[in-house]
Image 1: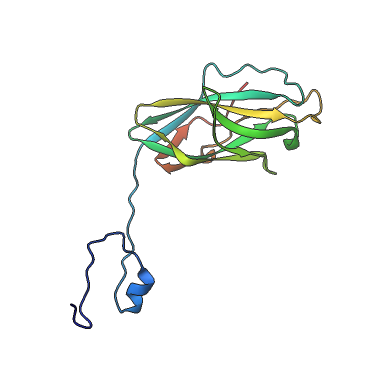
Image 2: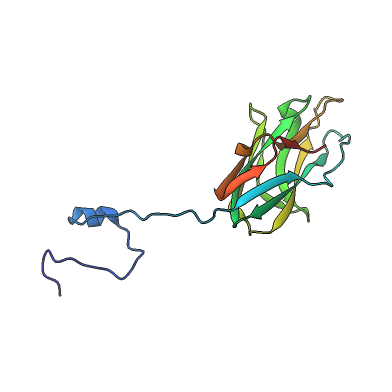
Length: 178
């Protein structure tokens, strides 16, 4: 039994009905969050990135093999912006994705925007532990209507193209495959 106006304290830390607490005259203190990592993510083109080659219209190819390494703490990669470079139209490439070394897709499938960038999101984020290196490939299709003789390469133009949930992005940019 409680006396009217007495403070009620709950042992349930997940109780967060701020509107009800405030309506009853209580104060709500929002939770604070602290960064989960101070690690640095180093991105690099892998030494065995695929050689440049002709890709048949309507075909698919691995454009860039890259590594993600964490140092000084764990990191989480939320998304990557893959950038097209070369003499081709953005509409010539389709189904841009990141795959793991086994060929399994990781994250969403992107399309190039007016800035020649495709957003690839990872849900959940890719977790890389301190001292660990993970290897991925950027893969895309060439549309059947692509003009013959055009060239394209895919990669990462700037540090800002690597969006982290935790940690700091590093590496030498721009980085593109062959």
